[in-house]
Image (cartoon, rainbow, N blue to C red; front, side, top):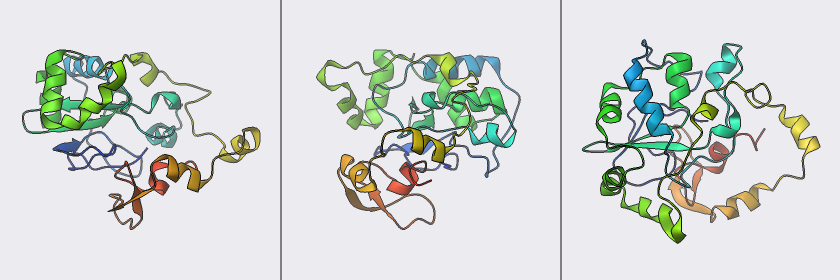
Length: 225
């Protein structure tokens, strides 16, 4: 997916406001580990089950932590949703696989994130919607045209190993078997072109996609392979 340090004031999805990133893990970077608190895990998975409709990552992703351990990871098709957890002074943004990282890799999120998980309003409730909109009013756009604000998510899909879709595929083989891929220019145009802002990825000087905080190369790592 991508690596973002815990509590970085950065939104992978390009949201503007008091965002703090949590759980954006990659195998090349160390992370905190601890034993699992069952109550925290159950509450986290309940929140994961009700993500915001239409808010997610681009492309399919694979668990690099599973890959380096020689394990079959969760289904890559389940990797695209993002979880938002409101607190009094910010909103925490995490990949939906944070539940997999906690259970499967003993990931220990920051204490302030754990407190927010345990104390925030009930998932899918009007109180949760109001708490998120207080910090991120732009989220109201995700409920347009009669769509629900919160979606339904199959929690098990984020955890179950998938022999077919749980490991990074052979991209060259897939390119031969699939229909012609869109060009870079076509994909960039689908995002409305490039913005004047620079990609937030550390050390990257590329211009970000118009509706995201990162550039094309970091939004579509699989396309570049």
